[in-house]
Image 1 (cartoon, rainbow, N blue to C red):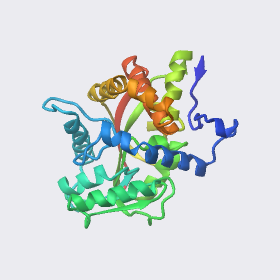
Image 2 (spheres, one colour):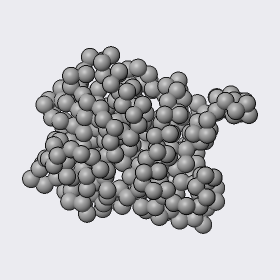
Image 3 (cartoon, one colour):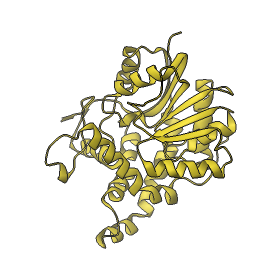
Image 4 (cartoon, rainbow, N blue to C red):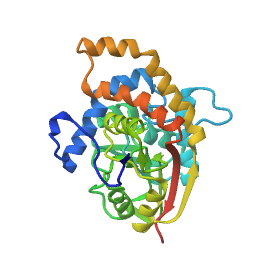
Length: 305
């Protein structure tokens, strides 16, 4: 049996020679994943309207993949009770999808941070194209260590990004610092339902961690405990596994459809290492969700007044 400990980096790479990544190297690894896989995501997952690098939220009335991706923004915005004039920190903003949606649909200001300079450039161009460049700002920054003044934001927003913090409490502490008193932290992600796994299950876990450049995963209880330990109150947890499964299955089916192309291009040396690892995730993540090894939840918590 294998045991997945919290706050430990489990990614493996032949170049590491058994040595642990430093925090700086972890960020470089994350940047390389998203930069190398941009066109994979562009062709297989997001479009110019949703600009989403996350799972969708499927419920009654949602008919398409793109609608589900945009609906995730709507659900999180409503859960966080974001109001016009609020200033939102989009922690791990990707190519700007959520920040742009919030500016267009919630009337708020958004500042997005990502460790990828290429993503910042994509996000800025996307904001101009969507007509909200005056309402959003994008910067290269580590959301665990920003340079923003204390109490700068009304909301900290993290869509499948907090998992990139090796110790999730580093993210919670920084979110707490930059939030105004009474401010809201809203986050969503996948969480393992247990800590011990057999060999087959462990391989799927490792394929996901390596493929998405994620150091580890927190359980729901650990995530909530971390929030509370860092000072957050009124933690609300919303189960969203059922609403996420159609996206997980779509990712899996896309991998199956493109499997012959992946093998051919990999054999010819036309696929980067990060792209091949990302392909493996599409298969592995469905196993984790479909077999109940992972659940998906939304978290909302508040910084005390």
